[in-house]
Image (cartoon, rainbow over all chains, first blue to last red; front, side, top):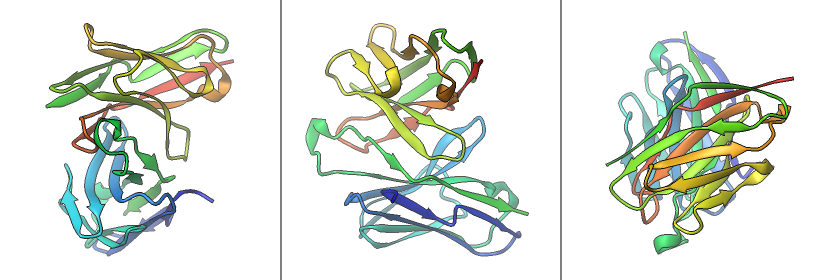
Length: 118
Length: 114
């Protein structure tokens, strides 16, 4: 089983619908992230959470919200989906337990959720 | 402030020939640098990382990268391409002390011709 699991893997929806993408992890990491991937733009950070009570906006948070239900679960919501939110979404985790200089920021990714908004 | 530039959006090589994927970075700190690989319909997987130890870093599947501070480069190389290397590769720079900031390059698609 994957260490970082995203559901659904594929979703087609219509403009204006509410969508939730879910992420769960078994790595025991405290930090979780949501990224969006668009061709030619690389990965851009939507939200990140350093623990259950700490949630932060990333570069492109407008139109998105998140919930950290538990250390292992981090969900991304689109309250009212629009076509330019069509993208591949990735959840990632990292471990702050490697304190100080050893904490390199290495990320561990899920396999992605492809969202199409018509 | 930090940034990363992948100099080629597409690279095409013949199977068995060397691979060179170029990455330049800028950072106000001593950065950590990574290369990730993404195969079709898959998430990103770490290939290798530089964290201020040896400047020549060896990764999985025969890839390696050399950190050159004077050139602010972290190019990815492999002596002999294999068909299974066809994928998209991302160069990533990270600030110190964990997730201060992680910046992704836009990616380089590697095509391997039989």
